[in-house]
Image 1: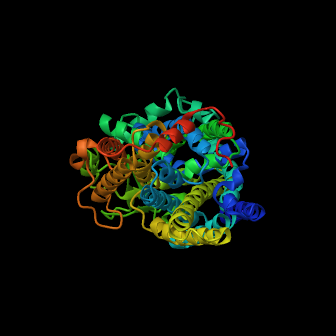
Image 2 (image 1 turned 90 degrees about the horizontal axis):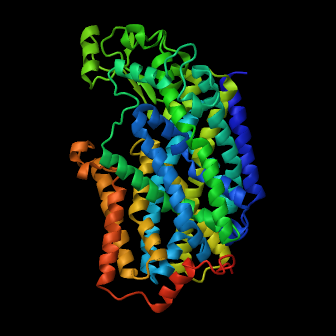
Image 3 (image 1 turned 90 degrees about the vertical axis):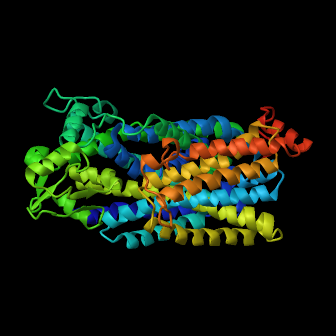
Length: 588
């Protein structure tokens, strides 16, 4: 069976499964739409959280970044994994004990202010739309390649699927859909990794294959990879490409941003009891680790396959040149997406791939009469293209397509539901039209989700960067806005509404302004995104850490010069932190 037919069958079968689950678990009440009626088993919730968490950034883009950044890409592994531990230990059980539907609802009650709640909604919308842009880009990339359609058509198809099971099923439908999506995406990630690890090193365990020698030689994979990339003028794969301060800032921003992500936090409201929230956090960490421990091997082996084995004779052929006529079929297929492209600048009939920005790359150009690097490869295709580059069976390639779609759609659905609940529950029901019925609120939530899907599709078609890069911006916004407000709301009795509001606004404004200044989402960037222009040498991906510090400082400073929280609020904080009666606290 040919690859396209097989891909249609595999992807179509997974879609039928997702939509069937959504119809079976259709939300009938606002409780089921927002938090699945608080009846999800901890293991299932852990699996759903894993799918919600391992978005297109984790499945598609993270290994691609590791493939091209090498050691420097480890910040994403450290930040996202460490952040989940932070969320599970410091925030999730306390927020679940409080028992409200949404993060803005908690902030509004804790800081006894509808204004604080509205500011939290604004922060949440900024975070979620930035995040969902990356997911919809992932959807478009997968569809454009494996269904052989253009990016816009792929996005429209993906938006339609998300609309059916997110708008129809709500959180109840999404939760059980995400359980199925987790099974699909983890299978699709690990099976090709096993194949490729065995193919390159003879070791079928990718985590061990990463540190093994290449089959038939006594040369270690990392040593060979370092040699291959440096021969073409690139930095050593195992060398760090970022400054220490930027690595620290990005890791910290991703960690605390993780703990402030509303679509992950809301997962812990779907289980029956507080101890179930802790249990589901543990299960989720286990399910997440299955992918995150494999990702470094996937990235390194993808770079090795692209650079050392994809070219006829390897990079030794004309020091990194490939005949245009002899380019492999996988490259021709991916060229249709526009995500891999070449330009024969000097008309010699060859495709040159080297780092023209380095002295050794320039020496290659001078020696061979090249006019510049002629190949451009999008980071986000590496995981999806790797099985094709490695020549794996068609059924494995089709499975990867289904996994990539599952990863992108699972997180997109969770984010869209968070946006819809913020608009329908936190703004409409709680602030604008308090007398609407539950049926009207449910309809408003579904309408808001539908509108959000349209906006998300536009952002996915016009993203400000790679999938993981865009997602990192969302984490920075969460780190600088919601995370400090939640932390201080749980662990500080002195921070008041004025402080929380001022802190969220200051943190969000600074971080968003910095990102816009260098990346120009919707606008032309005002400055070149280069280390020489960064504040303290911190990139836009890591600036959320500075925004978080600003948020904390402003909140405590303003709280010192304004009235302290009322006694009832201080008692509320104490009751949230107290373990006594945790199993039944505020579950009614």
